[in-house]
Amino acid sequence: MLEDPHARMRSLIHEAPPIFFSPCNGGTWFVTRKKAIVDITMNPEVYSNSFLAAATSGEHAGEHKAQQGFMLLPISVDPPQHTAYRAPLNQPLAAKSVAGLEPAIRAMTNELIDKVLATGRCDFFSEIAEPLPVTLFMKLAGMPTDRLAEFRHLATQATSATVDPATREATFKRIAGILAETIKARQEKREDDLISHLLDVNINGRNPTFHEMLGYSITLFLGGLETVVNALSFGVRHLARDQELQAKLRADPSLLPGAIEELLRLYGVASTPRRVMRDVVCHGVQFKEGDMVLLLLPAANYDDAAFPNPEQLIIDRKEQHQTFNTGPHRCVGLNLARLEMKVFYQEWLKRVPPFRLDPEKKPQFMGGFNLAVTSLPLVW
Ligand code: HEM
Image (cartoon, rainbow, N blue to C red; front, side, top):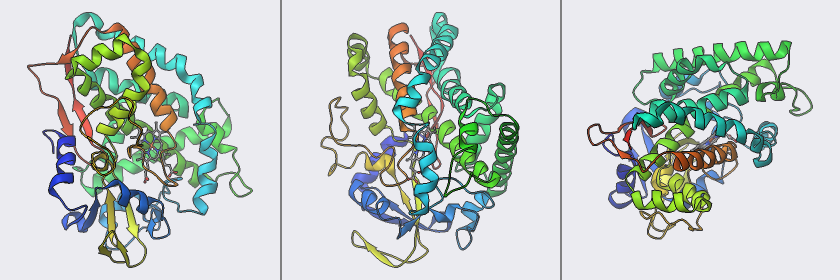
């Protein structure tokens, strides 16, 4: 897994049954095929996210204890209530709304490139991939950008598989503390940012409570800080190993949106859990009420029943990947994520000469709910 996370995901398609059980961490069913994942996500009555909410308890309490006391909005709410909580995010994160951020993304990308270009090498992960989406997201949300390193550390700890439950709980408390400061400041005085916007939205005829504001902020914090960083790093690692594709995209940047979708497919980041609400048979497997299911989205992207020649990057592929998931919780930040990646690749490929992996230092990876990169040394 740590040698090459996606190779491991890919191998599950060939080596493991489509749905299999692991007794680790209290016991979990793993689902690796696209059709089964779509069926599960489209049936939230049976496969619920509500265990993520404050009331979480039961046999998996240890695993999810860190999230007790916090609502994670809108992700811990099932339909029909989910619709009211999701609606306030749709407009500010729509493609048209985030398009206004394009000049800022371009400027930030170029500033970061300026710092490394002449040296002929960089650790792509820490010098480019981490600061770019994190700074941008913090600007969007209205959070102080001078605390970048601290925020990134907290986001990594919150989703890492290797931290113990007590540390994770302390991490969530710390994140909530920082976000609470920002919310209170915006309650006093609105700014042009997402937190200010959310304070005034209408949820079932009222404004969000402080607790709900915290719930939105924590989800956005984790959604915005852990995902794009890794999607960019895995994508750039692919390009570093494929000089032909680099040359093709440099010669014709109009191919970028299609290539980005394929990079998102080949390098899915997040896997997401559901709790089974009643006994049910899923694609021939008996689940019991209370069972936990983990949807392995990065594996499903290699499902050969859904993607012909799944290991090949095919720029004009038509099938929709699972990286942003399906169903009511499908990623609400996907327009921002795609825009960040498009602008980044445009500038990077325009300015940085053909680059490759540093032959002296191997990339490093980490597991968890998100497949993550921790170091990506490049040379050019
Ligand atoms: C490449 C980058 C990204 C990936 C791979 C990704 C992946 C995902 C996935 C798989 C889900 C569905 C989770 C589930 O079904 O349980 C999701 C939901 C979500 N994402 Fe993203 N995400 C990305 C970027 C972002 C960004 C930039 C933001 C913030 C602006 C964001 C905010 C959210 C939120 C708030 C949800 C919950 C939506 C809901 O419950 O209705 N994501 N994301």
